[in-house]
Figure 1 (spheres, chains in turn brown, purple):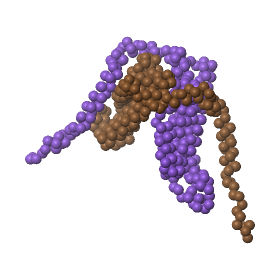
Figure 2 (tube, rainbow over the protein chains, first blue to last red):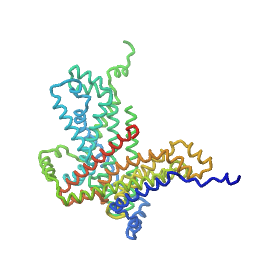
Figure 3 (cartoon, rainbow over the protein chains, first blue to last red):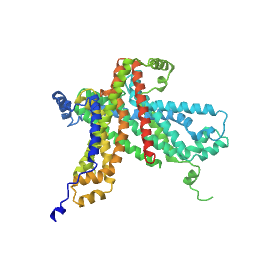
Length: 278
Length: 270
């Protein structure tokens, strides 16, 4: 009687199949690890440890001297100015391209129109321009523009303007298509110009969403401006790059803290502005 | 018509005071930004600088398509893909380990500590991590892998923790009540339910990490980015434009592949 209460050791029936797949994955992983030069032992190499340890050791306390804080404040203002100016220029680029691209303002979509071919061609051109602007990472644009315009925030502003112009243009076109397009269509059918159809037909309904997305992009631009500083486009990022190259841990930790506060502030401001719009 | 207040008349005219003040304030801030940066836009877009820009852009064409350089680009692309793959894999593992305390399963003190750690990992941008990892591990793709792993661990850890919190606890509880050890109850009760979500998040992050891995090389973390930085520093514009075209092609291919995978998943029975 006692033996029937003893359960046999139950084995997971799927275990063998899973182990097989895991082994296959490990085999596929091996060449990837080699290509990525994955050598964890290097982290504990004596020289690297000394450098990193010394650097991290300087993180506390962060450098709070008056001179340095003045530098950091100036760099923060530069970053904010870069993000704002860049987003403004991006809007300048995105609004015409978005208006050209959106199907809601397309007369040929409503009925036969004499210049349908030209309209489609223009739209395809706008789409490809926006794709090119978006597809090249903003950091690559920044690097190229630093080569063209020299070090400093001008390159960063233009890089943000180009990349974010591409992103804003595509999203503007999509927002205009996703809302209620009947007023605009009615206006177009009665013969109004496309610009008037936009202002009176599409903008009242879609305006809030357009503004909300633009504010969100501004917040992303603040972060992007800091990152662009690493390739020489000024602002907080350039300061951090310089401090890191001099292995000054105290300055780097100050800048990191300021960066985190800046991101929090931009996020709070963006949430506040978007609630104000609603 | 008695008793129509100024405010009512203004509202009837469609005049919104705080809308206009906000617009004016924003316009002022934009103008102030340009002024602070001393950006003279008219000089920037002048005919002379336009000619200079055109000359600069023309130096990029035609791109270098020699077999030897294409081999280098292929190697760089493989390196970028490897950086993103291993980085995301490490991040998924670390994220899952950190998600357990972050979802509150090991006590509230650990929950607060892990949440703070995950936020810290997430908030530092990948490029900054890459610059730090170059200090710790030297130049090359290993630094890039570590940077992606650290940042993505923060992102995935938080997403995994939210999945863990939202999954129904009944399967694991019934296993535990039937006598299974807590670890086994988790592995066989909770984990299979959330695995599709975890894999979806990880694949999505891998796609974004491929884009990121191409630019981490700018601070020396390997891949196509390091190649581009190197070629531009030597003013080899033809080679640089080949690398940029390769970057674009990689991003387009990854976009198309992920769209194809998503369409296959949507098919019934697929």
